[in-house]
Image (tube, rainbow, N blue to C red; front, top):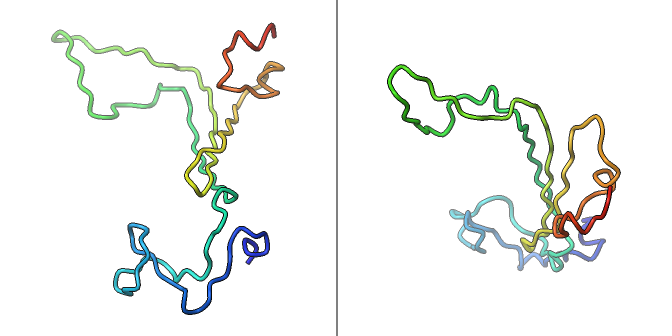
Length: 134
């Protein structure tokens, strides 16, 4: 109801209600329906934002054998691969509009100290030299 009040969606009349199938297509066949009946229609998807959060750590010390990659080394030797042992954690929020367009990324760094520029935020589309001296 809040989306209707905000002017982003409209209520549909009873005869206009519909179902969606697994592919996102409108269907009247109740055997193919996926989810609840749609009773509203979004008229401004560009105003509807979705956020997805992922976290990562650069430390690879405990990663183990991932992905099934095999390395060939002489008999009796062990393959030593370079990997970061320092822990640098971050969380990334990808914010997209319901149209599918990317609105922004929010990156949160776990750090004891950040430079002034890092605290103020960086525009990834601007070359580092354009920021001037720190």
